[in-house]
Image 1 (cartoon, helix red, strand yellow):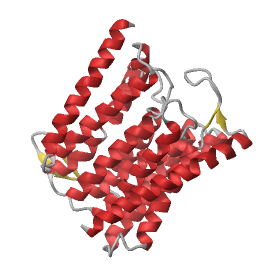
Image 2 (cartoon, one colour; image 1 turned 30 degrees about the vertical axis):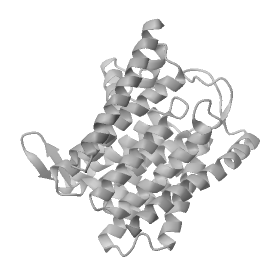
Image 3 (cartoon, helix red, strand yellow; image 1 turned 60 degrees about the vertical axis):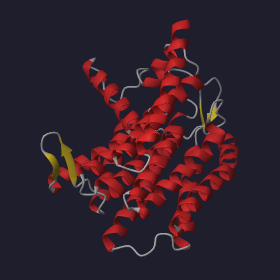
Image 4 (tube, helix red, strand yellow; image 1 turned 90 degrees about the vertical axis):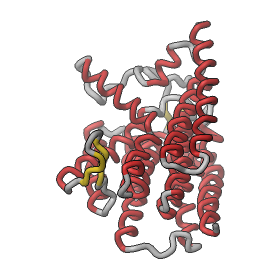
Length: 349
């Protein structure tokens, strides 16, 4: 029971640091003119500081340092240490790639090459997808030549998936916070307390940031925050769940992150079908379609929150966690209610 205090500490420290740092980051961004201007496919009406990811990163790392200093990570095997450092340092580099884009506006190809390089290095450090579940074949062990591209696609894909859903106030932070909280619970249940500490810190940072990012937002997280959150979620999923030699555990991170996964998958397929670049910006994401249906930003965001929570509670249920199906039923009721609100609003529009 004592170890759970470390996870609570990580959550609270991360949230507190983000609550303290975000106004200061905003002040710095306004002073330096580092703002996201309205126009094009953007829906905000005034310039917004886009450096909120700095606060999210600071909160997460500060929490992990505090817990590490307090002995919360315990004694790890060398392999486990490599995996943990791989997620933390990989998150740092993904954050820096996004921060450079927020400040300098990097070409898409430059960002992608940098992300692929970092993800490959993280794979080499031990953050590797070693197993896949294939219908009709069960659990399949992967050789390095196939593990490398699958792991890299997963890490880079999730970083960009979270970045792509960052189109409404509070959407990416809330979805990531819910996913991180569910991953915290599942990794603890699966006996992976070290990976759960990273999830706890990230969840605290995300929910702390919502104080300033929920509609009407006072600051945006920028690519730095989105890349960091997406990569960290993907990394925790690998070292905390996918490495477990069970069919259910291998499936859990994909279920927990089903909403951003399906969003980026359907958008990219649609772009390719229309002969467009998969990196071409458009308004075909789920949150854009909800706005086009007449929903307010808040209702659209709350509906996607409920979808994310529902998918997460399904992960709790299929992992055979006690009361897991009860949580899934409660989330289904919540999703039904928000879905009814969406239907009623769209019908009136």
